[in-house]
Length: 329
Image (cartoon, rainbow, N blue to C red):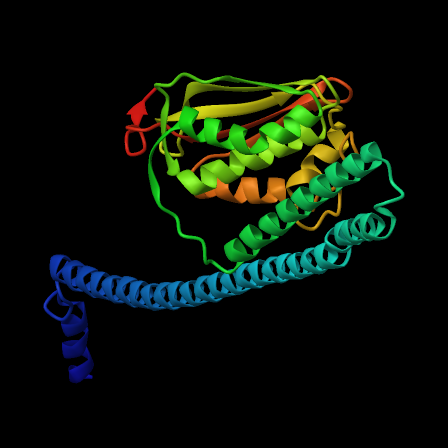
């Protein structure tokens, strides 16, 4: 009984329990430690998951990039394959049709002259000789186009750009095409100043002008007119700067081309072809060669035409002195 009386005061004594400040401090410290531990653990788990998610995302992005590159390479390969097939088909088409027909005509006229020479009048002989000459020149032109094209496809053409006098190139080209234009009484007028200089491969530039003028003569009727003119322009580049260029145009008042066929003229896989006003034939390679050579010299080619009114074929080349010069507009 005495022990019970002694215990009760002890339980009620303030010395048995910690004071309020110490209890609060200890409890708060425990809670803060637990909270820091929880936040740290959560942060570590979040960081690990974030890194893992980032690693997975990077791996997926890499796989997507590889897939996109593979698909792009496949598209390029397919386009190259189609172009190669079109080139091969074009080549065999030229061999089987465009060259076979002219040679057959040449052989027929030569055979006629050989067998019937004495029976033919002087005028008939002259006519046959003229036709034979025209057929021979046309066939030679076809062979020349085919040779240039084949060399270009095999990468055998040298590219040597230099400062070129544009009028001199035009004059040399007109000397070659003069007889063909004269046979159809076509006037060719060149409106190019002697002071115009361009930076281009002279052989390619000559080929471009020869092909464009040949087409103009081919599709211009008797007593027609062809004009050659140029103007200096500025072409804006992808970086926002402009580059000095020269735009050269070959304009005729010939038969013209309908809009639906203009785009086909510059595609190797389109078998669009026409005969000239005097039934002159062609391979369809001339404009394709022009487009390739113009691009090689850093320019572009464009076509404007209207049926029964004529055509304008224009292309650009860098102006001499401006081939490396660009300026803000």
